Image (cartoon, rainbow, N blue to C red; front, side, top):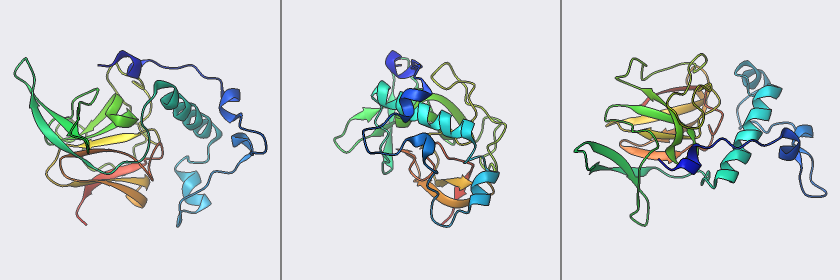
Length: 207
């Protein structure tokens, strides 16, 4: 595992809201909600909580400091790679053919959320691991592993996904499988877009 990817970077909130001259401070700016999402819906899922907004800003700054590519990405196909110990690991193939392993493997049949972009950091696995594939509200679940974000809440806190399943998987902005969604194609990995640090529910997608 890349050690740099698992290091927590301590950054003060004051530094996070500092901006260039003439730009409004983040702390003074109302969060921009996706189209079709009401203030009431957002508030019910904790999107407007000051603690969440401060944590989200700190995490985004941390990812920049770690040099992680946090830009929204299309689904990257997974390739089965046999490691030296004989185990087979699913790795994502980028457009230039590079194979990228997740910090924590996501075995076949699982849908895995990661704390950081690029499938880095701690993981939350759904599927054959005691956690259902369909979760209508991620409240109460936590990321695990020894990577960055271990022990942190899953809800409103995931940055990327690996879908090691034969069907699509959807991550939703609101609980109850509603609001904007990011769709991970079968056997693929991607950074989250609409639900980047704003994931509230997830389930297999049949659309």
